[in-house]
Length: 516
View 1: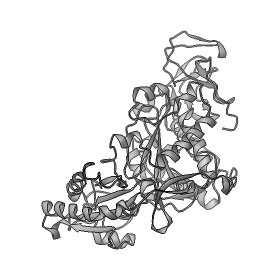
View 2: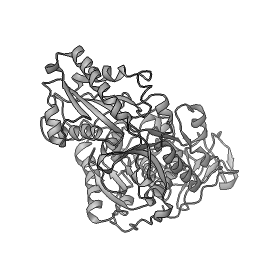
View 3: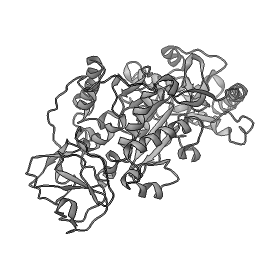
View 4: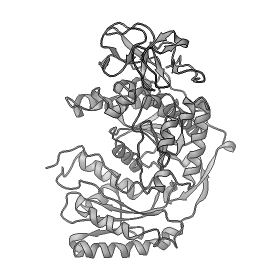
């Protein structure tokens, strides 16, 4: 992707993204037989914005290049002007050279006198929150109703005298019993719950179990090194008299936490305390042209100020993982990333009809993405250009600064849950088709890839990266806008998903084991 062309859409209805490309990208919906003067091309069929057009004749089985990167192979001979879709662009495995660390460059940090700040909540141990929640967590699905009933009691009216508290949030899930008692499935669940309990956006927590489940409160606390204190309490339903009694007791416990939680005030802190989870969902062909590279620019700025960004969704870097191993700080980090990709390909997803094996979702296809190779090309752009400093398992605590990777599925709620458990205090989420995701206790910033989506779903979208497609901003300018919004949202500005009170049901730990 070294020969990428500066995007300029003014006066054009199609784009060439790289001089090596044998396709161009439609900017507008166009009719069959429309002539594209800039490229001396006549379309063979109607085309939707974001879809691909053969720039030259492409022979059967020849690679198809976008941004100078292979995104598939021609299913048949494709004539110049042919509209390309997932029906004539086929997914094939092909060899990729891994040149570990060959493109790693040390980060050029902003001078300390020029580093930006935001206003956040200082916590014990040096962590900083962007929000101030009280969390109610269930160890097992059997206590899910109880934690939601406790949280639901604390309406905005009941919290009106506690202006520094962002809310009381319940975190329930569908597992915790009928699962493996030991090993990685239970370790992963413990890591996830522990990450939320000790999250910098959480002032106090109440953990509620049933009593006979496999994910015991005691086992969770032992695994995560937790102990009860005035900011961390527990309830076990079978010991406390059942559902109604536990709800009543839980409300009393949270009421006793309110005064102290409200004593947390925002203070000015360095931007280096920001940890941003990078997400994309409902992607389209414009994701790789506007929102994802713009977010990547914002990530580069954040990293230069000492902050952290977490790229995830392992199936959605497949096909371009070599570009990330080339940026690794050392061979160990590169090997960790490749090991995670190979685990997905050779163990976890073997023989399964999932996207890492080629086919992306119907919405992605409609949006102009032919297969996982093309989707991954855009997805990886969210990570910017700085060195890859570490690779983490799902829900591991992220303790390295800079650009890092966490192994997660591509399913947004599960992926974001892992990032938040790892310590992400902001989520930046790009979408081209229109995701309505939101999360607690970490705010989710929604970035639209195109202006039509931004206008159509304005109540869900925070930032319009479609300005790049419209020719009103370039990638550099859009990246600076996103970075400034990181600071605003981290300092308390409400995201659209927060205004809609999303995030009440999006806590979704990854279930990798069997249910028995």
